[in-house]
Length: 74
Image 1 (tube, one colour):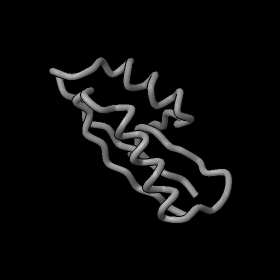
Image 2 (cartoon, one colour):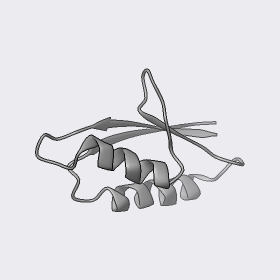
Image 3 (cartoon, one colour):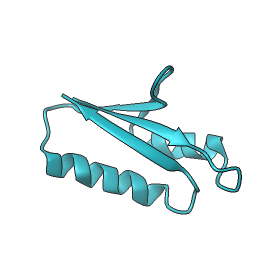
Image 4 (cartoon, helix red, strand yellow):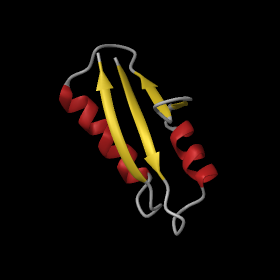
């Protein structure tokens, strides 16, 4: 399974390099093309596990001004 993340940055928010740093520290890898980052799950996971991970990403990016779009595909 993979979770893809697309990011919209606010000019009034945190620098893109800082957001990159935060997501990289969480295990997300940069991706070129349609998605900005991808997280590759080690095993199949439940919806609850995906939501817990997304909640954690949102918590880490709180007050950065970033707007995120998530897509998880098995």
